[in-house]
Amino acid sequence: MRMKAGIVIFPGTNRDRDMAIALERVTGHAPARLWHRDTSLPAGLDLVVLPGGFSHGDYLRSGAMAALSPIMAEIRAFAERGGHVLGVCNGFQILTEAHMLPGALLRNASLRFLSMDCHLRVERAATPFTSRWQKGDIFRSPMAHGDGNFFADDDTLDRLEGEGRVAFRYVDATGEATPDANLNGSARSIAGIYSENLRVLGLMPHPENLVDPLMGGVDGKPLFDSIAASLAA
Image (cartoon, rainbow, N blue to C red; front, side, top):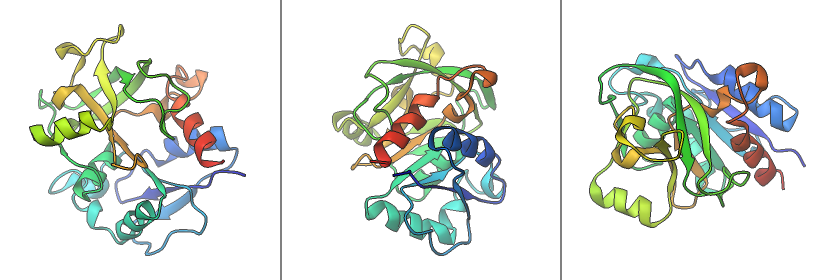
């Protein structure tokens, strides 16, 4: 049985092709392309992806306008029915603005756009998104964002930590969560989080850009191998 995925495209989305390449690499077939004004999802979808970019030009706040798009009501219902949702970069911002994930993505602490590689540490491995990693694994991932500074109040952060909902953390190459490794200033060096049922994942860096040696490495491929293996069963 093959996993079926769909990628949502908003005005200003620019990472949908990268995401399609990553998904096709592990599933053997192209994902469906979904438009932000669609009012229904194709039957049989296992995964909906909100990719990176600058939806609606990032007017108001990053992801704020996209969170009100017609398709988001369907994605919320899809997740409530047990579907899986992945939001990367702008997709993570949209998920927080749509209140499908807690917290907010603020301006980077440096007030500068960041475009460089970072290192991430896997904080929880036994999920549909991380089953091909071990807890504590370190991998490299590109980042490209101006509003990637994850913020939440202390109670929310404590709950995310206590419930094992921190997916990835910014670290240095040795795996230490140092201030210098936390380039955007995110609270507790958090790079990605899960929903309560672990079916919705949001993260800021772009693992889809490292899925082939010709891209410079395959550090991000385990994310997509995990998804394909977990959702095709």
